[in-house]
Length: 175
Image (cartoon, rainbow, N blue to C red):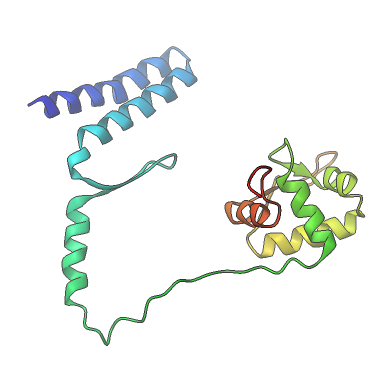
């Protein structure tokens, strides 16, 4: 009974609260009402959830997991491949690419311009562009925006790129 009341209250906060804030032109409060409603719904159904993920708000229901476990048990050994640890390794021997990676990772800015990286790394724009292209093609850096008129595209590290950065340049105090 209490769980049902909590679910109804969550729906009210989610639907009615966000609608009212939207009507009154308060987008921040509307977003907070949506997040609060989603989180309270997740906690109201916590007994049914097997997996929960944070910022992207990903949840997996227990029923789905239990059904999949039953199917996995029926698979024969011939149909399965040997499992093991998969590891991706990058060799960053190029000094220019290391400097560009350092500029992208060791910065107070999340997004960096080509000219900003070039100035900080003391490299030519062509060398920086080649390094960024290599990082981008390997899924380590991502481009944001297009170069048009006076605006340059901005570059940042992906999650994998940040992992590589921290493996090459450990944080102070980690050494």
